[in-house]
Length: 98
Image (cartoon, rainbow, N blue to C red; front, side, top):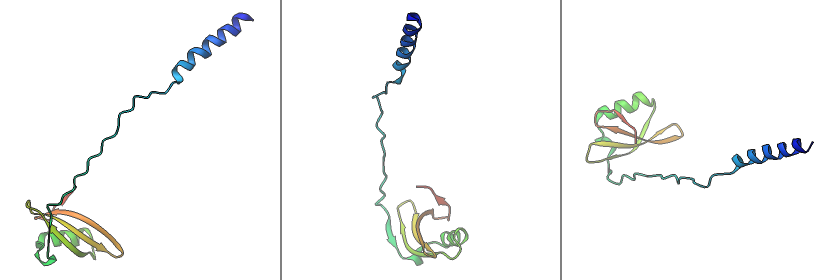
């Protein structure tokens, strides 16, 4: 009986070794690219290719504001119905992921 109790204590004691928590947690680093190089342009100055791509991707879209940078990439504030969004496109109407 003593051996059984001693064996149970040893087994339970050895299992509790693995129940400890690790305090070595690596911090998560987040970087945000704020692109202030965009300059506002009139919606009439947006190329036809970009306007066609907008109408194809978002039927019934309303272009509210347009911005352009040195690379001729466009930041477009749009509204479809009651939903608003910002999308990015190059001069040829190809969508960019930012």
